[in-house]
Length: 198
View 1 (spheres, helix red, strand yellow):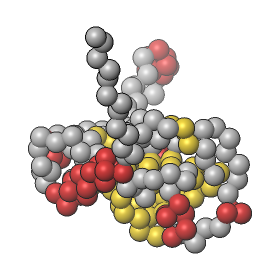
View 2: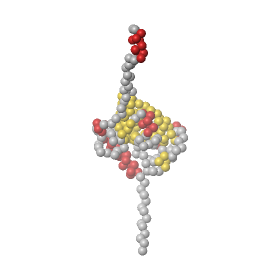
View 3: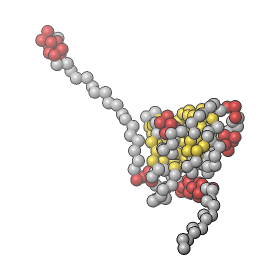
View 4: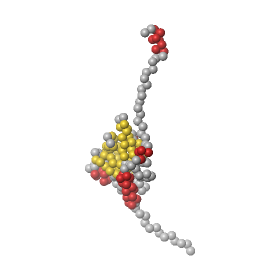
């Protein structure tokens, strides 16, 4: 190689191959609605593995800043009161009442092949759901949920996995839970009749 060629390469180096990076896209299409009953306003209710046990009637709620567990599930997982750590912040229940948590516990949740650990807050309140998972779980899983499609999608390695709550059976379960929650609401006592002025 001549000195001129060497200088030319130093001034105008041969471009190196651009590094191509594949990016996963978590998206939803009309095909994702196949198997759902449309239109609907059903909650996204799924089955997850918590501490290795299959747990049904878990509501995915993007509006929740905590994961909530109810006493039936806590006892069903063979957990004891001494397994709890303190949790001091009160929560607001579906019916607008302030609920004082019993404590919190960190447990693994498995969706498909992915396992993430989150803190569950144990509340002694009625719910037709066994648990509620919210933003902390979604963020730990790097997931996107969409209630219209009744699905949760999350990246795994070079692919995307789905957690589906979109079967008509699941929608039926979500509707049953809603009805039970409404029927469980305390009824207001009879109002006193208004007195008519003379």
